[in-house]
Length: 244
Image 1 (cartoon, rainbow, N blue to C red):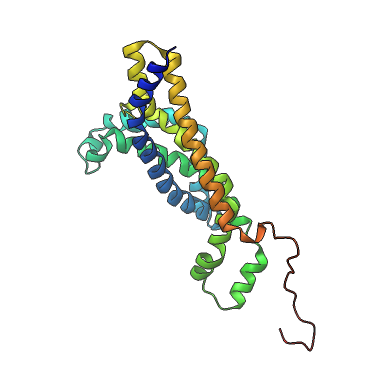
Image 2 (cartoon, rainbow, N blue to C red):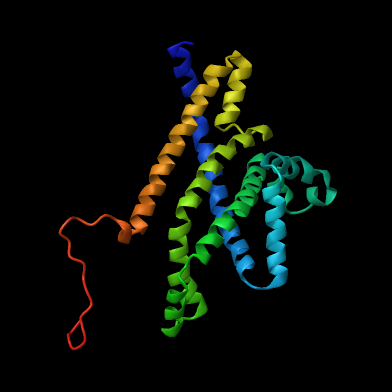
């Protein structure tokens, strides 16, 4: 092992970081919308929607992501109807196939995170909002969704980190992100340990930064849980006959 080779490997793998982050963040964003829709189906009380969401979760959480990527990239191209459809310009591109597979996969897992967050919203706050005359849409946007995001944020941060690591599977469909570049460098140099040590260190740094960002966001969204300075007097409600 030589320091010069580690430095050269680092410079070779760093150009793959933007593609890794693009895959992770874009698929997580699309997956979040899908997850919210699936969670709403589960909580809708409508049996067909609930059954569809359950079947979706069963299929995508019960099969490996690697198999899903293969089925989307290699499997769909086997059907002439797909190759002659308007979707073919998207489905023939490895980047978009990876985005679709990652989004569908993370949407299944994240839907349970969001569903748990929605169920954790205190019923009393919902009843109070209804008593104030809020419509169902306004109630969801102003009360339910913000509280659910606070509750689901730690688990969703974990899902984001898992998605960054899952982007390494995109290298099997010719995408040159970090792992793809590492595999190419190994085929050229046959120095497996050094290359994967550098690749692992890059993923470690990315996930460390993401962890700090999620913790900072969680801290910002929960001001009521921050430690109060000693000597701080909490406001109290007035007794009967006093002005508030």
